[in-house]
Amino acid sequence: MRQRRLKAPASFPVAYYHCLSRVVDRQFVFGELEREQFLKYLGEHESFCGVRVLTYCILSNHFHLLLEVPAKPTTPRTAEELLAKLEALSSTAPSAATARQRIAMFRQANDAAGEREFIDRLCATMWDVSGFMQRLKQRFTQWFNRHKGRKGTMWEERFKSVLVEGAGETLATMAAYIDLNPVRAGIANDPKEYRWCGYGAAAAGDRRARTGLRVIIAGGEQVAEDKLSIPDALAKYRVWLFGQGEEREGFTETGQPLRHGFKRNEVLAVAAAKGQLALEDYLRLKVRYFSDGAVLGTRAFVNEVFAALRERFSPQRPEGARPMTGLKNPLFTLRELRARVFG
Image 1 (spheres, rainbow, N blue to C red):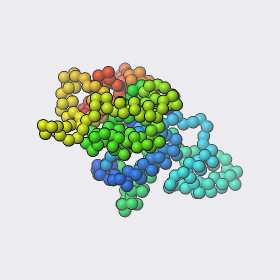
Image 2 (cartoon, rainbow, N blue to C red):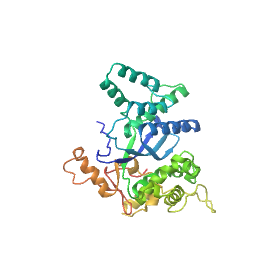
Image 3 (tube, helix red, strand yellow):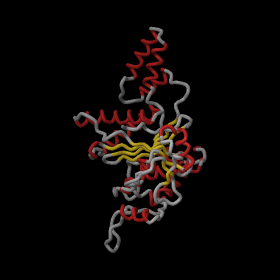
Image 4 (cartoon, rainbow, N blue to C red):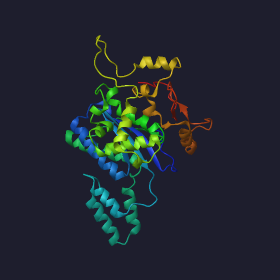
């Protein structure tokens, strides 16, 4: 039986999620045109749903997003606010014109309750990680199927999500893990060279990407966003990305291949010997905690989420936090991974 998605408790004013979704059969469908179109829809639905994309990485058969999702406001959207949001979308069902006609009909019939129900139904995907991902993936699938003359789903399964602590280094850790994907995959020597990730877009001057990285660094330093300039934030984020120096593709002077990270058996050997890895080295690995861990943060943060959602876990479990395997000064996760931590 499929488990309900773990989301932030209602008491959280804002939540952060790492979301990952793969193409069915791991097909390589994201070329340049597809990535451009995906980014277009990403921006549109980010605005419509009231979320913020802090960073991202679009690869040939999957994508990563780091999202900031505010709690749903207590004051519901007005009809005018909803219509303005619909008009900003390139295509939607219903269209802004159709929604405007429906609202006019409710008002002509003096049916305030019907109008409110209609508006609330269209707003149901706002301020919600599942609603945002559903809209984004459906819209891209519609475009892709029409463009390729195909039918059916293009996604392997429901997306994965990890609830990430927003304060301290956890958010920056997850962001770096996402932006280092092209380096780990060997398709870029430096993430600034990869235009389909948040850091690459920010380095090229994209305003939204730069703002997202400023949020990440401000959260790490626990300062207000407006107290941190964007150039300073980008510089600090780059230092964070390359804490252990840049790894490059190619060969040494003696002809030995350079590696993008540790081999899986080397990492497992270190963990088995109870050795510890520096955080910077951890980020160069494909670590399942970052996609399968459910919640990621300090012990206090993970246990706060665990306590708020206590009914979802066994009464025999004394606390939620589990340390990440093999990491010096560990982060904690809510889901304990018993196999294939790396790779």
